[in-house]
Length: 213
Image 1 (cartoon, helix red, strand yellow):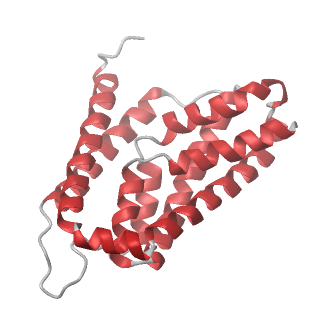
Image 2 (cartoon, rainbow, N blue to C red):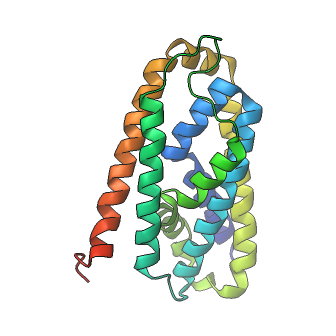
Image 3 (spheres, rainbow, N blue to C red):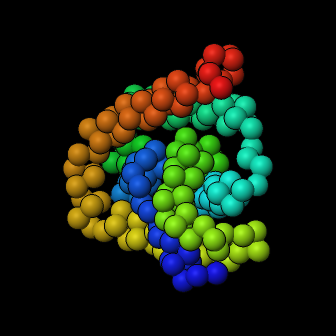
């Protein structure tokens, strides 16, 4: 295994987590509104999905049989409805009289876990980022190298999570969020519903047999 392949796997995992998306927005709200501890629980749950999608992406890149499109279409459909529910709750959230955060999550680890395994950007973005950063060392991509690649990717995921937790827990970020909380939460709700519509738009044609081969 070449050094460039190891570095590529690490950077692919790092960028995969840091690319803004639904989970990034959710983490911003949870961390800024409820603190670093809640944010850490969220990313810990989301890490499960990161590992799953990166594993599938690496297996596909190496050349194994890829999972059928129907699986991803069903997942996209479920994800779309889930994100629509999250988005609507955020858009319609009302200020609390006790001064607590506008939108709170009672079980951030479970929320992160669900986000991780149903994330609409999961497989395609993992496939794109890992392909871009490790395909240059195609000669060294073998199944025997898969365990080490996954280990390096795990380190990249954890590194990115630490960076995000540090950012969302910073005093300046939390103060800005709390000062404009209602607007940010509502805008996030609209974005979540947009992600939901996108997931449903891509999943429905395949399930109805409308997608061209």
